[in-house]
Amino acid sequence: TAGITQAPTSQILAAGRSMTLRCTQDMRHNAMYWYRQDLGLGLRLIHYSNTAGTTGKGEVPDGYSVSRANTDDFPLTLASAVPSQTSVYFCASSDSWTGRLNTEAFFGQGTRLTVV
Amino acid sequence: DAKTTQPPSMDCAEGRAANLPCNHSTISGNEYVYWYRQIHSQGPQYIIHGLKNNETNEMASLIITEDRKSSTLILPHATLRDTAVYYCIVRVGDMRFGAGTRLTVKP
Image 1: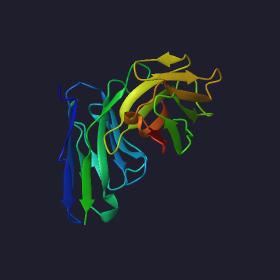
Image 2: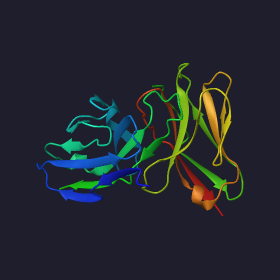
Image 3: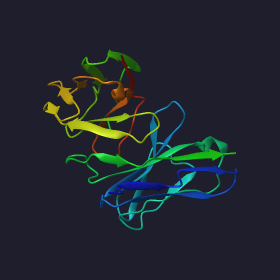
Image 4: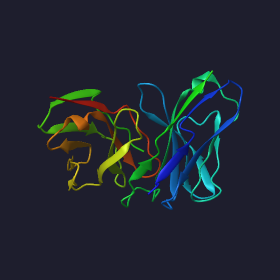
């Protein structure tokens, strides 16, 4: 079973370049999330989507954009990367947005991005 | 979503119970308490969640106080593989992680 898959696993990116981090889930989950985790710190929410066709801003959305054209995919785009965006990026999905049901979230393995 | 407060670190002897506290004094009536853990640099892993009743599964137990302002995650027999950062989250919608508690299980 695939679950949730992120690509690439790691990337070195020149400052000023753009990049899209890919996230795909095969569980037909409604909600999807993007987080960043800086070295030694907790996860911070960048953007989320509670259902296909809708997105919302999290705690640290600046410099990032997302789209949710279908249920399975939730790409994260950095339009013009800066060194402060060096981080590990995690994508997650859960069945329900509200958290009332057994809506445990499943996380991908992460994308390690270094902006130089 | 309500904010949570957790101790930054805790130690536990292998084979003993690990009790991880979480304060969520501003929790509202429809917010659930979730616990996740993150081992090394892996993606977080779901452990357990609850609303107001105590919960138990194969991994852990969750004790929620009657006023719901705090909770405790219990790992009944901690092993070295339980060494991780444990996150307590209260949520209705988007999940927001705090700094968590770094649990170190020692031989």
